Amino acid sequence: MRIPRHDGFGLVNLVAEVEHRLTGASAAPRLDPSIRDAVPDADTYVLVLIDGLGARQLGHPAAAPLAADHRATLDAPFPTQTSVVTSTLATGLPPSRHGLIAYWLHLPPHGVVNTLYWYAQGATEPLDHDPEAFLPAPNTAERLTAAGSGVTVVEPSAMVDSTINRVLYRNAGVRGVGGEDEAVAATLEEAARPGRLVVAYYPHVDAAAHAAGQASDLYAGAMATVAAAWDAIAAGLPGHAALLGTADHGHLDVAPGAHVPVAPVPGVAVGGDSRVLHLRGPMDAIRALAAGLPGTLVAREDAGPLWGPGPHHPEFEQRAPDALLFADDGHAFLFEGDDQPMVGHHGGLTDAEVEIPLLAHHRP
Image 1 (spheres, rainbow, N blue to C red):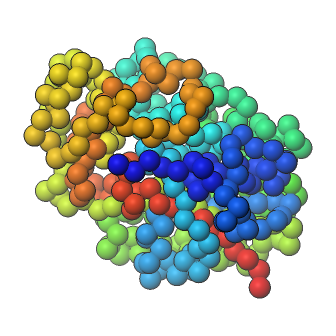
Image 2 (cartoon, one colour; image 1 turned 90 degrees about the vertical axis):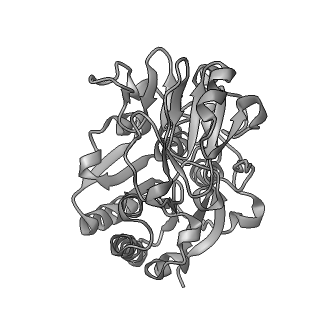
């Protein structure tokens, strides 16, 4: 079982590298010296976050402009899920320390909670929990602001008022945009301000991979859209700014017949995601649930530091599973709240899911 790296070759280290360049300090170790030069010196950094663009997806023909600026390969944190990984970006901490450790999270006293949309399994009402206080303080934006810098996020307008935004972007500026041209223009406008971190979020590749898979025309179009935006930002970037890019996770396709329903077992709470179930309950009952399913059951004490190094979040033990069920390659689990088969999946520890690119555009 692969343990994602946090020792200079992880996403958390890229966040630390940028923070250190802007402020002289960081909450986590910087990038390893062997790849540190991939990040140019600059007064402002534009970080393009391409949801779902694993490093192994850069071979797609439409990804050629992105592949040309691929400088290194990093590890995404575990689990390779958007809410978990963007929380690492928002805090500069591994999941072990920021505490958002699953897509469907065991969150006492609410039960199992969806951390993108913030509702509990089986509930019809929004979660009674303050999203802005969920992640620890100070977060990345708060540390940068205290140091005289700051963070602005450029993202689709439909996301601006979402609960996950309130979780992630406390004390950051957020600009909603209506399309790719507007996104590029807003990013360049923000990049004109010195001493800033500008995060530009593109959901296109992830959405297309989920819906239609990596061999589809929809996916090719999404990749081309993001690559064109990358080129446009690079062409218009002011001289004091540097352009970086990365992703929150990669993707793998799952055939229709490999989506496996998980039958509930009394006493076992099922969370996690389609690729790795997070199970809480008596181990005998957990083994009964896992019996016959295409996966590998691992007790948490045998899993190693999957979520990163300590010190752990104060509520880590209450949120962590008693065991994890890792789906076999090419399989995905269906369970309450996550029961719609999709083509593309992520969350697990395969290279396709964990390996993400570090992109950097260097001016000629």
